[in-house]
Length: 122
Image (tube, rainbow, N blue to C red; front, side, top):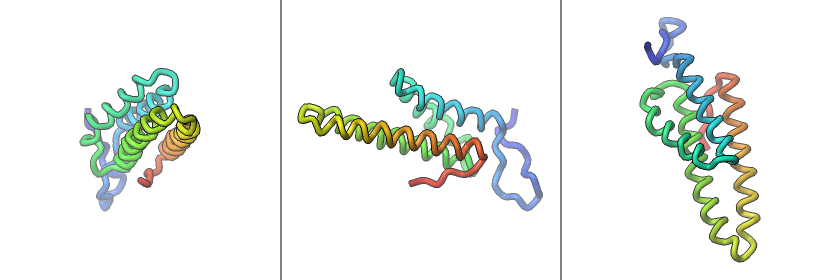
């Protein structure tokens, strides 16, 4: 089974990813979202990102994987900082802000994926 479909037109240089790869990207967003209930799924999501990113190189889905990877690492950083500073109360605000930010990133990315749009990386 090919990971890419033939380009729509002859002059299309960017490969069109297969539906299987689109579904995999949906799965990763789902794992990230379920990470609020069972954190190990969030780790599984980033592992999938790193294992499969080469399959997406050059396609619009690569931007979603980069978005998901950055969301994981920044979220982890702020979770650790929030946990450490929870002893002085400010950490609870950091953890709340981080949870809101993570939800924003997951929802924003998932919506753009549903629209079959590239994810800008910030």
